Image (cartoon, rainbow, N blue to C red; front, side):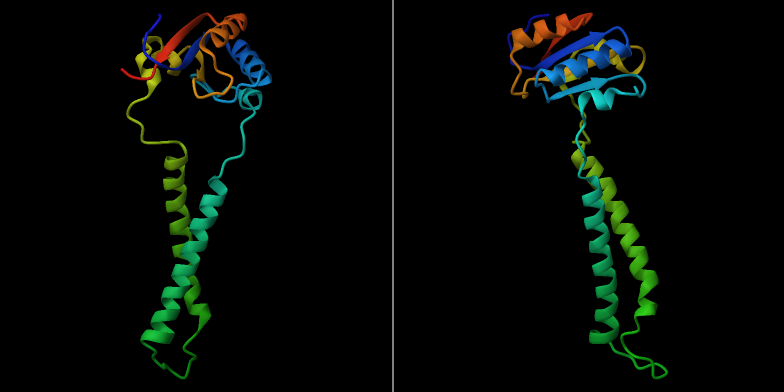
Length: 181
C-alpha cells in the first residue's frame, strides 16, 4: 500500500518468533535503533536482540522516595519542634523515633506514586491514538502475528532501502505506516 503522505515508518510482519528475532538482530547490526517489536506473548531473547537500554525508572522511584522521606520528616519536625512545640512529660521536642512510622509511610507512598506516574510518562501513556492503528492487520499483534516497526525518526531510515532490508529479512508483508489518519 503506497501512500503520498509522510510515513511514521515501515511495519513488517514475520511468520514466527525466530524470524522476528533474527530481523531485530540484523537491523540492530545495520545501525537501526528506533524500532519496536510487537508479539502476542513475551518472546525470550527479543530484548537482547534489540539491545534494550537501561530504564530511568529506578532513579524516578528513588527521587520520589527521597522526596517523601524529606517531606514526611520535615513536616513532623516543623510542626512539633518549630511551629507548635509541646513539652509532654519532659520528653525532648525532637524525638525522632516517633517520627519513623509517618516518615516510612510517606516515603513508600510517594515512591509508589512516582513509580506509577514515571511509568506512564516514560512510556508515553496514555496514548489513545497510535500510527500503527491505521494498519488493519496490526490488530493481529495481540493474537497470532509478529510485527517489527521501524520508525521514520531513525537516522538510518530511508524508505526504499529500509523496505528492501526488511524484505531481505524475509518479512511476509511490509506496510507504510501513515503519520496522519
